[in-house]
Picture (cartoon, helix red, strand yellow):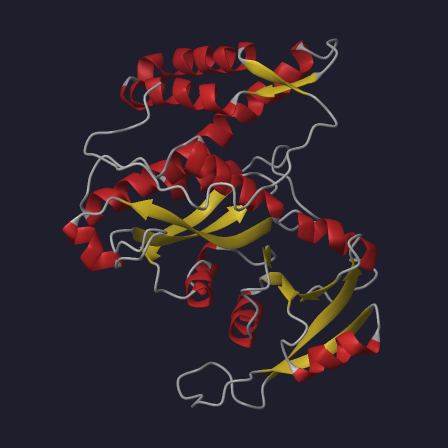
Amino acid sequence: MNLLITKAYYTDNDEKVTLYKGHRVLSIDGSTINLPPSAELRSVYGTFNNQKQTDDVVIARVSVLYDVLNELVLDGKLVPFSQGEVPLSQSHFKYAGKGDLIIMDRAYPSFESAYMMHQQGIEFLFRCKHHFSNQVKLFYESGKSEDILEIKSKQHKSFKGLAYQPETTLAVRMLRIELKTGETELLMTSLLDAEKYPHKEFAQLYFKRWNIETFYNRFKNIIGVENFSGTSDLFIQQEFICALYMSNMQTILTEDAQMKAEERYENRKYQYKINSSLSLGFIRERLVKIFSKKAESNQLLKELEELFIINVIPIRPGRSNIREPDKYRQRTKPRQFNNRRIVF
């Protein structure tokens, strides 16, 4: 169902789909979520020590392929934490298409990933460590703002079964970005045309990756993916996929409502946006009816849209929250019980 609604969104919908110079801008990133400490989940996902050194925390790794401009999840996976981020990211490539641009942070660059995307016609933009390779290190030390490099695989093991050989190279463009903090950020991309993709655009282009971070915040704190109501692996996987589906439905159903809300409240002091928490509750209450009662579905969708529009919150410019990553580090998560779900 996720595949169907995302495919429908991109089909004959050019006026609504946001692109960057003809590219869908996608991002891959991972996170972790806590699972109920059942015997089955311990055996599947393993256990970890918490701050009290008690071996009873079950943590899974999450990875998603996310359209950062249109706020849609194209693929999502929930796997044991022991599974590596790079191989997991490669499993998402089949859900991207020729001409898509995938942005990833510095945990993900690898020759294998770059080669796989190149073979599929997928463009990429990595944040790159200064010591990624000797060539990259020399570029960093050169002080150049950009350069074209020919990179190759660094692995020393057998290349048997791989689509490339030790001598295979790939042309990439390296860019130096000077941050306001005084730090230097290196970006590696397959977008080689400096005229079409000027250096000055890349800092903002890479920053668009931040939208996947805000997705995880919504996924955990508004959609409430960690509030599982079962303790078997099958149940966990089903609820995880349902949470992805709810996220996409919320994005699609609020899009038109947001445009109409902007028109209705255009003469007010502030701009207004749809309330994410309330809109999700309204969708949950009506989603089954929308699919099961075809005769009433259009009326239900109109009611939903009006509920979204009248339940908006103001956007007050200039407000910001200081990030405190260690604020909750010493707190333990509440126990999860069967049949406990967020109720609206």
